[in-house]
Image 1 (cartoon, rainbow, N blue to C red):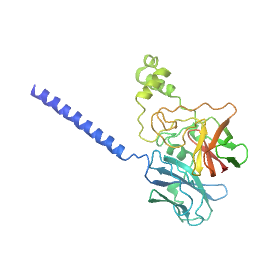
Image 2: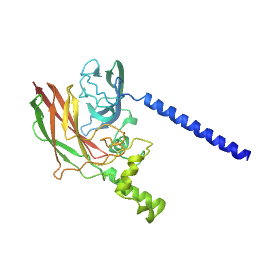
Image 3: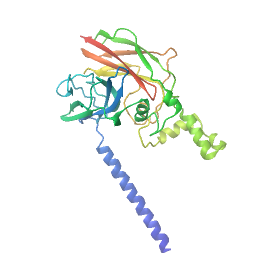
Image 4: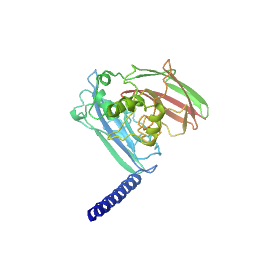
Length: 329
C-alpha cells in the first residue's frame, strides 16, 4: 500500500514537473517570438557552378519578425563588398526564414576570396560571408532538402529527376502605372509535374494499413484526415514542406503598400496552422490553371519605383521572374 501511494505521489510530481517544464519552454518560445522591432540575419546558403566556369553565390535571410517587413535601401545599411554594393539583393524583406532568395555571380577566377553581405536593421548589423569552400556546394538535392521538400538526408528517383518550373512573365519587363490604378500581370508557369503533389489522405491510408490493416484504412476519409490535421498538426524534427506547384508574387524592392489579388501562397516559411504557406501544417496546393497562365491584379497605393518578384515553386525546386514598375501620382 505504501509503495502504491509512493509511486502515485511520484507520478503526480513528475506530471506537475513536466507541466511546469512545458510551460517554461512555451514561455521561452513566446519570449523569443516578435512581431516587430527585431533584426534580420543575412544568410549565405551556398554556391553552384555555371557552364561558363563562373559561380553563383546563393543568399537568403532570416527576418526575426513575424509581421514587420523592413525596407532597407541599397547603401551603408544594405551592401556587398568588395566591389559594387548593389548585387541585386532585396530592399524589402518578408517575414521569417526566406531561403535561396537571390544569387550573385562571381568570375571563374574568384579563388578563396570572400563576398560579404552587410545588413543593418533596427540598429543591429549582421553579415553573411560567402566563399567557394567545398562544404557549401549546392545542387538540386540540397535545395530540396534544405527547403523541406525531402526528409533530412533522403532522396528518391523522382526527386533526382525533378526539373525546376519555368516562369515567363508576359508583357513588358518595365511598366508604368498610376497609384491606385490596377495593373494586370499574366504569368506562364511550366512544370514537369514533379515532385508528385503531397496527398495527405493517401499518406494517412498507408500509415493506417501499416499499423491496423484494411479495417483501419476504412476509417481514413478526407474529412477525418482534415479534422485530425486541424486538431493535431504533424510534429516535424526539421522544416517540413507540402509539395505542390504554386506561384507567388511579392514586393522585392519598393517601400509603398502593394495589394495582390487574388491572394497567393507565401514563399516564406510560415509554419503556423492554416497559414497560406507550403510550410503551414494544413496547407493544400492551389489548383493549377489548365493552360498554366496565372492572372494577377496588382495595385500600388504610393508612387515610387518597385521591383516585383515572382517565384514558381514545385515543392522541391523554384524559378524566379521580375517586373519593374514605375508608379506615378
